[in-house]
Length: 387
Image (cartoon, rainbow, N blue to C red; front, side, top):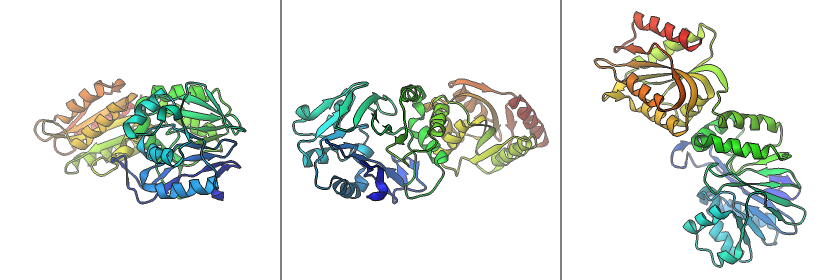
């Protein structure tokens, strides 16, 4: 357990699942997933959240080793999603004197999952700013509704200056994999939390009033150094702002002709000194395409026509973006169709339903394969997009 110590008396008793390759049934995992749970050793021992079913055995071993024969006095429930709350019922049965700490929404949802004996006598109902005194530690609670369920709350330890941040500041990936934080944290954020940018900004405003030295999320590494970097990333993401001034080109191509146009567009833009990222939506991870759409300042959507609409990989991307409040971008459209091109109209209609999306003209229409006149139009589109 030595390597799991956050401080002298706070342990991460969580575990990583290196076998899982799909999170929440939809997000592809490249390097597994971590599930964090924390034990605070004090006059009153506190567990902050339980853990996913898949790694219960490891978690129980870590918990018992950390307790070293002592009991649990309080279980703080930050989030009722099963990857963190799966073992609440078991823990309540194993430690019958343990109090359960949560807000009103927590207990409303708790009864959906568990039948806990004497739950009314065992629950400690907290609201914004309330403090739980465990001896040395003073745990203060702040509500974070819709980041990303309505019952979510974060816990600030006034003694260690740790923010137990629930799902905020989390990322995909196992803790025993050495990888950059940004890409998997961005993909995690926009996949899972991205719809709720306003609520994320509200949480950041609360965090800004606290002296935070460490951030302990429920997924991903514990953050101790250069915290402003991670907080700034969340401010950008929560504000739906771009991180890069380049152009992202997602392309949905049936036979490859639209994809050829995507790479020609990339060449045109790069000749202007512009950074460009192309994704083949037929083959790339959709959650990464969503993250890239938010990452870049400009996007050019390129797609083949299909059933009088747009080829499904592009339709799926646009629906995911709309669902996550995609906004504040300047975009271009290139459509392809052999007899009655329809993808441009379809893409435009979906984009027009989003907030503050400027669609730049000309919309380029390719008939089956790219021709010289299309290339000239693409050059005009590049010029207009970059004005």
